[in-house]
Length: 79
Image (cartoon, rainbow, N blue to C red):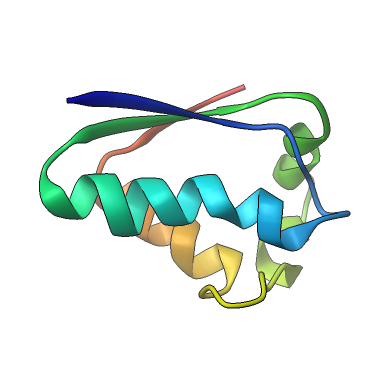
């Protein structure tokens, strides 16, 4: 199954910013589904220097760990 997660929240809402990465890396990829993430709107500010390293979504691993896991799984991130 191919799944596309669309992220529209940025550093102003760490939980919503981290959720697509968490679902793609710890959900879809873990069970063998192909996943992609699209950053739109405020989510594009995740690409600014230091933002990924600073965000720690409540109830999830830090965003830097989620992004690293997504990269390890070969999950494409589109802007």
